[in-house]
Length: 279
Image (cartoon, rainbow, N blue to C red; front, top):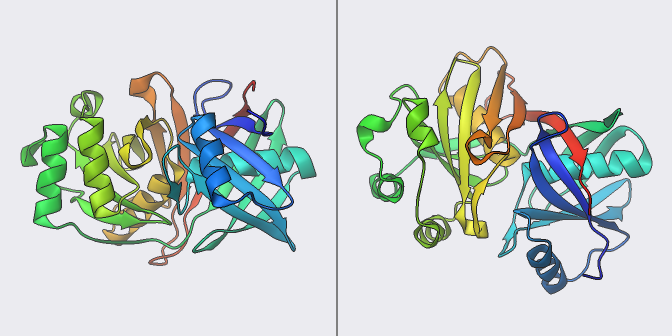
């Protein structure tokens, strides 16, 4: 591969775990076909491309199969890469449909990073889509946590959230990748978020990402931002912050934190650590 890509695992658990992302930084973005080819060759769930633009950066995200409007873990990886290249700081990012920021701060061998998501909102899910999603995972209505109703959630990208009553059901998640791809693409969703509330502030999540050709993401900042916004919408007792453990059941434990203000629809701050991987 004749392209210069940094490999960075975002939302790592110290020196382990996290979700790998490819990071490309340059003076001008490649054409769309080239970015898609590079993302396919890199093979991570997302590769982020950033080009300097005035006082900030023009940013686009590609999975191995398609462009996505926003990716949280790749944004965290980009924040880490920019901190390494330009020093600790706050970086302004222009996405296809939103303007956001990411911070990066070196902390020994790791980089602490935090993004401010696009605005959030949620809406009811149709009975037909919910039935299809439950069937995809072999779930029944009585597997769901009645405190957190299924919903379509947005925070830069569109997701479906299914909150489960017990940890074992989450651990046993399985589905057919092709069927998941058809469902997610047909509904215009980036991922489906399955969650279990251990406490009011600690959640375990799993994120099938079939729309991008990825069975499961070990850390998903965009879905975390959307989920945090939804918890605000339903007046969940989050006390201003939630912590998420993701990737544990696939052997790639990742840690994410979301800070939630009281303003309906406001941006969510999602933070975590990033570690540099060998290329």
